[in-house]
Length: 446
Image 1 (cartoon, rainbow, N blue to C red):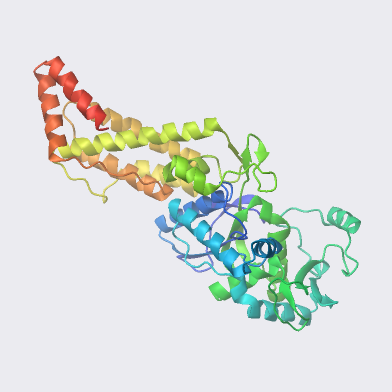
Image 2: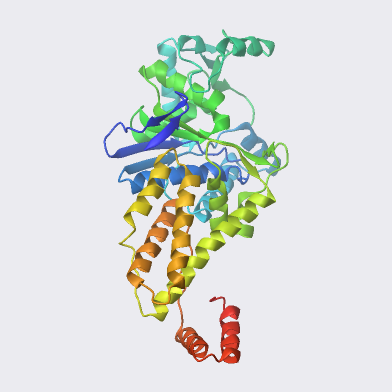
C-alpha cells in the first residue's frame, strides 16, 4: 500500500507501527450545523482507505472525533436558549445519520472533546512544566519557536508567517505565532475550572489528547483530514506531540482536497452549500459515494451538474449488467455465491487502490469487467461458471468502494414471463413477444 504523506510531500510505502494493525484518526466536525456535501468527502475518502486496508488483511482501529466546544456552538445555544450540549447532540445525530446513509459505518470510536477536559488540562500542565507553554492573564500559549520542525506538514514559511502574524499581534504572546492552549473566559458559555482559572481548551490541544485517550498511545499510524486542516490545526497538533514526547503524533499525514461549486470553494460562510442529507435524499447513497470518490482524493472536486450526471450514468451501466446477470442466473436455475473471483482482474483493481487510492484506475478496471460481462450475456450458450466468477468479482469490487445495489429477485410470475417471451421469440411470434417485452419493461426487468 502506498500513500501520499503530506509531511514528506511524496508517496510512500505504508508500513504500520505494529505489523498487521493500523491506528487511524480522522478529524471530525465542529458540531454547530448540518454537514454539507463537502463535509461528506472526508467521511467517504477515509472510509475507503479503511475498507482497502481491511481488504488487505489489516486490523484497523479507526477513530473520528466531534468538536463540541466552540464559540459558534455557544452562540447558537444562546440564540436558541438551549444548552451547548443540546446543540452539539442535535448535529452529532445529523452527522451520524449522514455517515450511515453514506455506508460509512466503520469508525470504532467517536470521542467528544468535552469528555477529555481533565486529560487536556493535565496535558497543558505538562507542556508548561517542560517550558513549551506559558500563562498570561489566565490564557496559556504554546511556544512555537521551541519546535524546530514547525511548518513541515503544511510547508509553511515560518519567517513569512511571523511577518503576517505581527500585523495582528496579540500583545500577550511572546511570539506572534504562538497559539492558544487554554482560553480564560467569564462569558455565559460552557467553561471549566483549571489551574489558570475558568476557561475553555484550545481546539488544537483537544485532538492530540483525544488521540492519546482513545489509542492509549501518543504515536499512531495515520492522521487524516481535509486540506484546510493542514495549517494551523494539524501543524499545531504535531508540534505539541513533538514537544512533549520527542516524536511526531502520526507517521502518515493524509489530506483530502476541497469541494468546489462551479470552481468556488464550498463553505457555509459563502452560502453556496448543499446539505449532505438533501443531496443523499435526492440522488441516493451510491451516486453520492461514487461522485465523492471519482476525483482523486488529493485534488479539489468541482461539483457541477455534469459531474452528477456522469456519476449517475456510470453507476447505471454497472447496475444494469449486475441485474441482467442476476436474471440470467435465476432463469437458468443457477445459484451465485461470493467466494470466487477473477484473480487477475481483481488484483488489477486492488493494485490501483493500493497506489494512493487511485480510484479512477480502479474504476477503469471495473468497466473493462462490465464490458466482458455484457459479452458473456450476449452468448447464446451461456457459461454460467464464468459468469458467476465475473459477477462475484464485480460485487467484491463494489463492496470495497462501499457501493451496494439491491439484488433482483424474480417471482414465479416474472420467471414465467421470461420463459414465455423466450418461447415467443423462438417461435418468431413477434407480436406476442413484443407484448411480453412491454410487460417486462414495465416491471423494470429489462
